[in-house]
Image 1 (cartoon, helix red, strand yellow):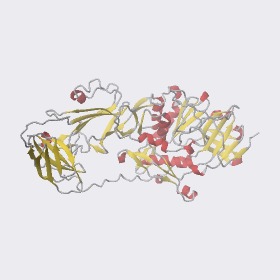
Image 2 (cartoon, helix red, strand yellow):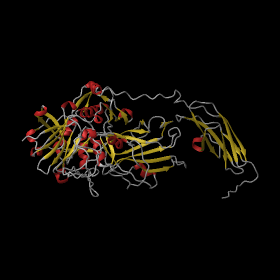
Image 3 (spheres, helix red, strand yellow):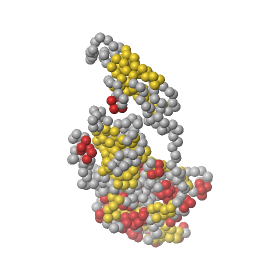
Image 4 (spheres, one colour):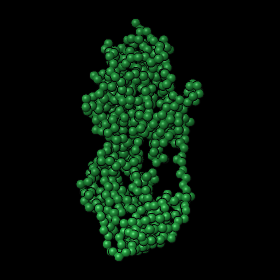
Length: 628
């Protein structure tokens, strides 16, 4: 007898043993007979245990201490559970900033992105022939593995040009015939040798044993110069072509930005899930990799369908990293009987059919989603190379027809894509999210043993004569073996049009805004004049004249016990003040001091040196007494 079919307009309570979800649900199912999937459009779902027989139970696959048990609270479509803020926040935060702390996690880099890293060594030394510690050596670790290449270097957020020896070639890091910044790049090879400059110039603090094998790092040398470093120690970062990835299509290992290969690397890596080869469905990886490498049109040309470009800290949990990686290919990752299968965001025609004859019990049809789950606009950020590799808004994606259906009110959702660096790719992924959310049909299908032909994430053709459904595409969003030797399925509406797009759907990305600088940004301030030095008791009072300037920042006061034609070499900087006077205290009777003053503006430009002024502390005693 064909079971009765029930139409429902509200969420049907109940549970299933596996769900196509993302975020917090990651793992193989107990018993190896059910399917669980991680999707890029899902949020963390953590619930409490239930007493019903059909309980949805999952254990995380990363199981050091005792495994926790996750019980999702709803059998809704994985797409409707997505809250993108949880997927994008941790990946891109702070990547381009150096970190100064004793213990921190290394990073894994896929594709190409800009990043800095932890400062693991700092050393000051004096240039040859000088006693001043004017050279600062810094070592910044970029990645916890070998990388393919280190490209453009940034100081703060400005790219700096380097010559073949790594020395700066442009102002302000190079001027008057001298480079005040030099960089050495180390890719992290297994046979990497120690940095020769550090070994030779750090007096044993960095030796030939300090090789940092398997760690990609930068050695930056900064020579003190108030024009180059007016703000102190800068942030140094670089664009990195990251990890070399194994490709099962040709059994080679090389750099690439294919999301399927990045997911495979994470599944098999020790910093990821550490899976064995027999836990991976390589056919699905190959199929997904081929989809990602397909060429699609974009304004002004073409690009790969999907790429993966970003980094994460190795102490990030899999239920954070996997959704971020999957977001780069609009993908879903399924574990069935202990084997991982990957589906990239593309139309997969059904290969299996379901009808009333395959049902063992009541089929429940839900034709619409709750209003709160419907959106008509998707916004978010991607990592923009044109904006110094910072998170940048991509043009929002919307459908006029959907806005009209929703009463003319824009209902938007945020979708951050931390592993996507193309605005057009970001829009295509956002379109997939939007179109999937507007497909509202879901079906709870208690199948007989015909359900054994299916796995989570697979597309099926559903025929229900009573509803007029004939080979209607549906995706298996959850799968569970039932105690009655059947399979309980949750099906969500699927369509080829979800993955289609037209060129006019993609908006041109606005060019990076030009920075409007003051007209006097490269103009040195006026040199202070009228510097006088007046002796007092154990002190000398300095005063000088000034010419008012709109971008004034501060004055520098320099001092030497002798006169000099080159204060930069022979004097020391005493202080920085914003007034036109300064009192030098702590001097003894008979002490003579020479002083120079110069002005600095907000752009770091400095004036010429003022004429020197000097004074001698008067009195009969040629000594001083310090108490305390």
